[in-house]
Length: 292
Image 1 (cartoon, rainbow, N blue to C red):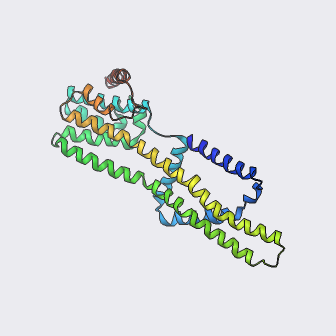
Image 2: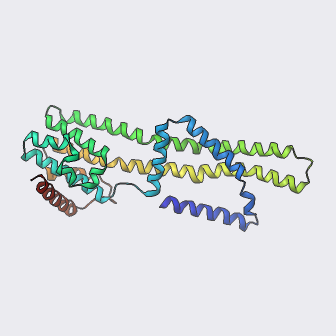
Image 3: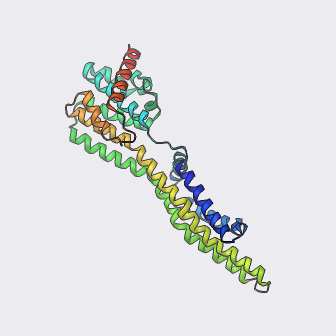
């Protein structure tokens, strides 16, 4: 939502200020200049990125405009599910617990937390490391190193969209100059025209420089930054899972282990202890009934 508000403020202030100075707004409207600039930018974007990154960039922009980031309810779902799994690990046999992580689609534990169950990547992350805990051969520091490596790798992949969009923003001013030069070349071929016509042609050419800088710093650079912010927030649940499971592996009881995870959540989204207790009680009871 903030990205939309920011773009509206930018456009209103820019066009309003230009009109207040006596400028004619329609002079800025040069569609073929925009076609040159945005078309060339799109071409370089496609040329420098893989199909996967191109599609992921579109997904990243959609996440920005829909504000698809973890909220308090999402963190409660993650912590509640891990709490139930840890409690099952302590109270039931290895084969019973292993059934949950081997086939999460049919697990009553994961079905009791639909928000988490929809996130296949995060669910797989939880299952993989619970499987290692069940095997019992891995040491906590080894698991921590492995988690750090996986989170870093996932973060790098998630931020490829940010790098791709940032590349577009960085190239737009130069492409704007190219469009302006093309406009000047066109004007130079019309030196026999009256001054008022020649002046309009030169003004249209200069719009290319303006448009390249405007699109770069006022549209694509903010969009890239927002993609980075959203993707970083979407990686936070992985850190919550990591800290919770490490505390559990180091001997903490489930109630204490999930507190380790809760503390890694930002203050704005962090659930209170009472909210977490209510979630673990309700979630635990619901999964127990489903399992029975």
